Amino acid sequence: VVIIGERINGMFRAVGQAIRDHDAEAIQKLARAQVAAGANYLDVNVGPAAAEPLEAMVWLVNAIQEATDAPLAIDSPKVEVIEAGLAACKNGAMINSTDARSAKLQPLMALAQKYDCPIIGLTMDDRGIPGDASGRAEMAMQIVAAAMETGVPTDRVYLDPLILPINCAQEGAGEVLEAIRQCKLLCDPPPKTVLGLSNVSQGSKYRELINRTYLIMALAAGLDAAIVDALDTELVNSMITAEMLLNKNIYCDDYIKAYLSM
Amino acid sequence: VVIIGERINGMFRAVGQAIRDHDAEAIQKLARAQVAAGANYLDVNVGPAAAEPLEAMVWLVNAIQEATDAPLAIDSPKVEVIEAGLAACKNGAMINSTDARSAKLQPLMALAQKYDCPIIGLTMDDRGIPGDASGRAEMAMQIVAAAMETGVPTDRVYLDPLILPINCAQEGAGEVLEAIRQCKLLCDPPPKTVLGLSNVSQGSKYRELINRTYLIMALAAGLDAAIVDALDTELVNSMITAEMLLNKNIYCDDYIKAYLSM
Image 1 (tube, rainbow over the protein chains, first blue to last red):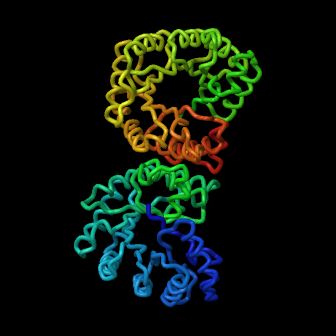
Image 2 (cartoon, rainbow over the protein chains, first blue to last red):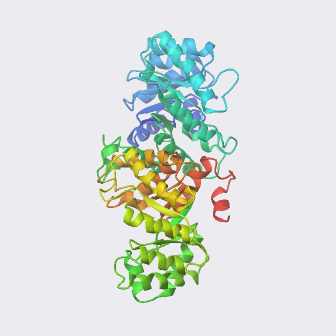
Image 3 (cartoon, one colour):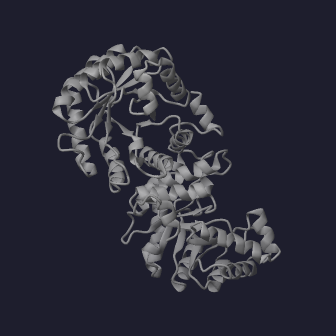
């Protein structure tokens, strides 16, 4: 599974402050820690507070790249901020994210083609997020169709069926597991699937327990990638264990250490 | 999910000693602790060391029933020991277990009918355990057919597709998940499924982590019951969380406490 570390996000108070202060060291510390903990990509989001989000994104990407060679998931609601981030990336990138609205889908798919990078596609449009699995899969098909039209290989599309907080949409969690299975059947080569995991436990009391339990179920349903708190050791250990049980990594007694030293 | 507490088993050294010493208090303590931790049934197995397994079983059942009203899963390789245990049960029982060999299947299914109790059926016969999911499902169908012939309702049959230690049969874990899904489709009303969970981690270093990770995946595949160490709090919390995420228990902030006080 591809682990996308979620921590460099201006939404977190300390990170927002570091971005405003141009405190590269604080950001770099977070970058190194996530990579050491197993993150394959680092999400990069300037957050809502940046006055000049485009400049902030470029500064953030450059700051991170001084600390690590990990590829970056460029995360913004604004197309131009994403493009500025992609242009600054030296070690590979991913677009986080488009959705099924044509105003975003066309320009962002074009960027995925131009920068030859994977792209996350959220299964929502102007009407919102479909309630059930098949509605989400339908939305996913629109994203996959746009990829095909633009010349982006379908296996570079990471479909995100959007898990909502369990405390307000309890039926949704099972639908999202089913959507993961359905998304894998949409085309050949099959698209990838991804979840912004932490959303499932938003506002809940047992956040870490809920996160890792849901991640394990999603992995068993075929999940390919997850945006997670890579510094949550129990979460990462659960993920490595699930992958081992699903026969994706060879068993050895110290399979956790073996995985992290790969 | 039905939790069957595994701890009263003569295979564990202290329990074997308590059985030999007729130390009812030690057994009763273990019975009460498992029920308090969420066990719905208590497994009762005199283990390999009992010189008179039939007498030991009756003593054990009576000792447990002085401490708790929980129903008991009468667990023995010997048909006559199982029948003696069933006859002594006052508060409900379950047979643990038959397999698909006719020498066991017929008499044990007859006991399930006579004592009107659920029965666990292991998907194995004289040739052993089939390697893949469909082989296990085929074996399961023989057990279900025997239930139908004997007049045991198919939804009182708990099919166990037999998880083997991950350190020697790594491909098996995924096959067992698939077997759980297939078993549910064999007839209507569908049979139940069960796993003797701890076997998955036999000989592994991270036993508890492997147990709870696999349990979560099995629950997502539709598992109905599990023979587990109910005193493993993290395991039980993971199970309760998985059930909540699968929308089987209503969410509340303290859903773990709510579940355990049901």
